[in-house]
Image (cartoon, rainbow, N blue to C red):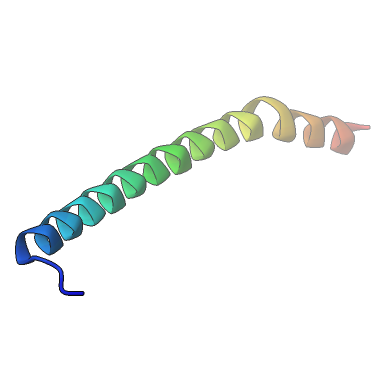
Length: 55
């Protein structure tokens, strides 16, 4: 069964837009995780390690 050119074009555009949207969401999650990790290092991990080294 053949697919219409217009339907194929619509599906491709939809798939590309969905892919772009997913990539943007992935970048946003990655950036948020990076910020959270930096805060963790600054406020938790480094002070705890410094306490251990001072003991």
